[in-house]
Amino acid sequence: MAVEQPLATPAGDQSRIHDIGYRGYDGPRLGRGYARLSLYSQTLRGSYGLGRSVKSKVLPMLLFAVMCVPAAIMVAVAVATKAHDLPVSYTRYAIIMQAVISLYVASQAPQAVSRDLRFKTIPLYFSRPIETADYVRAKFAALASAMFILTGAPLLVLYLGALLSKMDFAHQSKGFGQGLVSVALLSLLFAGIGLVIASVTPRRGFGIAAVIAVLTISYGAVSTLQAIADAQGSSGAVPWIGLFSPVTLIGGLSSGLLGGTNTFPGSDGPTHGQGAVYLLVILGLVAATYGLLLRRYKKVGL
Amino acid sequence: MVQVTTFDVVTVIATESLSKRFPRVTALDRLSVDIGPGVTGLVGANGAGKSTLIKILLGLSPATEGRAEVLGLDVATKGAAIRERVGYMPEHDCLPPDVSATEFVVHMARMSGLPPTAARERTADTLRHVGLYEERYRPIGGYSTGMKQRVKLAQALVHDPQLVFLDEPTNGLDPVGRDEMLGLIRRIHTDFGISVLVTSHLLGELERTCDHVVVVDGGKLLRSSSTTDFTQTTTTLAIEVTDSDEHPDGTRAVREALTARGVATDNEGAGLPGAGHILLLTAQGEETYDLVRDVVADLGLGLVRMEQRRHHISEVFTSSDEQRKEAAVHGG
Image (cartoon, rainbow over all chains, first blue to last red; front, side, top):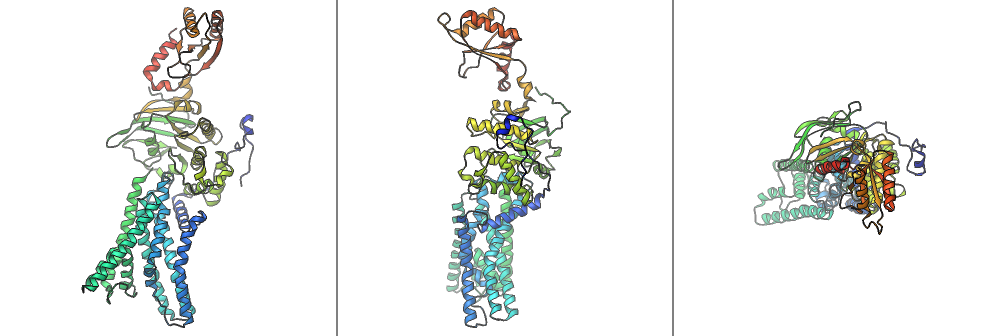
């Protein structure tokens, strides 16, 4: 810590405590890349309430536990009954838990960006070496990483459980890998959507409500339309309808390209070709949300 | 009336016919000014272009025409390098209420590129220098305006910049807080060796704090010169006397007596407390003091006060007013 030196200021001033010699800083200045990394790690930690108040830790930690507990129970049951496969596939797990994931992104996306806007901290960032794109990338990457931890951890629990109960290693590893790809895309997509909405709603409460609304209402609407389409015999339309909500996008991609079980109504899931369309739409949406965030922050400035 | 500053000092900020035009307003209009090390006040009414100038100098907003250099770096191309060496304290609130000052300033230090350990050490040092002690561990939401201003100042200084931009740092402070902040700003240069560009729309503040004052109005340079140039033209005496039965208006009696002896006087500007009861006159030397004493004594009045008064920077703002006043003061 600092060595407090007496100063060469006029004698009258020395009675004041804060007249302790000023020391300059000659050490390294690590520049943009380091600042971006610091912002990334601060936001990622903040997404789980680390480095924030106890109150801020409750919700993300609770949701993390809620995500992992069902996986642990499935594993326990599978081990006890000496099952040959897991009751739920790796790619399907996130779809089943979509409500929890939506709640998490709704609560943490505003935490990541709305506070800086609401409390006008943004100018302090942009008066430093980092640029708009650095800020957006750090925030995007941090929230996507937080989501990946949330959605990947239960898959890891499932995978370790499967290996412990000596299920087929190759089969399980392939499924686990496909599961990780699908939750990685889910993390990017949900983080992008959550951040765009949160970045235009400085009030945290509105941000949370808006993200939940977009994710769950779109899922509800698309599922209902799919069910109607299927019941009316136009089941060919079911996969195309699925393109219109984030949750069904991930579900359709998983069953179309990643060998997951079909989560749509009707017996036929998306074909490989349709799965490729799903992938393109997801990547397009991720790029679009990134572009929108850049545009948004270009305007915020100082 | 542009005054060219001396060139033997290193220039910290230099602008050359710098202009910034928005579709409907011209925020800066061919501003050319050189600013040396030390504390420089940037004075102007709201909307005079102060904040626009700071944005351009931070390399965050391109100038429409003209060029500017900060610490010898071109703002158009070396923005990031400038921002690494410069601190900025915004005018508005910019602090999240739910974190402590320490956590916040450490984070901002890292955003400036300081490694983790250095960020913590510099934060502890800087918060102490701006006068925040035990309270720095409490959430900022509970701070007074004065304490928040200190945190804002600390985040601008934590990376030991060579120059800080302080945008209206005394806004919202009570008179005591204002004095403390001005003292702190002075120390940023004298003790910390950091040059300061401080904006204000209050001239009296800058007069006490700054080595140099730049006055802008409507995006144009009105005047740039050292504070002593502004205020040292003449020694003015302010006199206040009592009234007596013989002279119900003592002030007028003294003025008439002084005029009779060839000394011109002027009333203090209207609107101030005591206006009309204070006489201003130019001191020609020791004999002026004696003369005033004798005149007041001869009239049998009490001399309430006789003090030296410097000219106020505000006089440059009301230039026509100033000339009239100058004429009146120098008239005799």
